[in-house]
Length: 194
Image 1 (cartoon, rainbow, N blue to C red):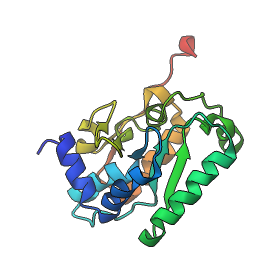
Image 2 (spheres, one colour):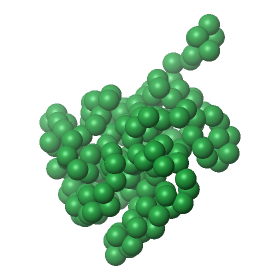
Image 3 (cartoon, rainbow, N blue to C red):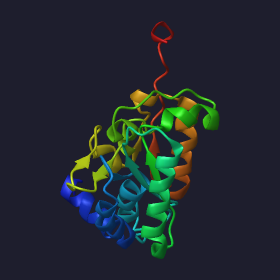
């Protein structure tokens, strides 16, 4: 059966944690607020593998975008979210995508571009098919590479963030939990285009 946007949402919302987070997020009144990453696409793989909907999900990522680049403003949002979701007893990671470039290099030892929207953050995932988010306000699904790779268990490098070493680590971590996933070799970068 083809993985449509509607089917993705239905599968993801079968995880009661996703459903609770999405229902509560609007109360934080965050700009460009999106539930994103593994809690959405891993729900599909769990569904295909006949696993419980929340199996293997390490955290629940929420992206938003606020031009206030201070740590204090982001930390206030993080604290508000912790209070809002504390009864769910899961790790909800809330990140202002406007600030990622300020700390990423120090934390991961690699440069990171300044983002202009929450969607730009979703666009930077290492694996193309995992670039999926659900807008907390509108319910719109954002999936710039479509849903086919997730449906077919294909892990291919994201051309917008082509870091072969990190791609391989991430892909192998997914494959360890869902062994039927297929890792597609990253296309080597043309030395002329570096």
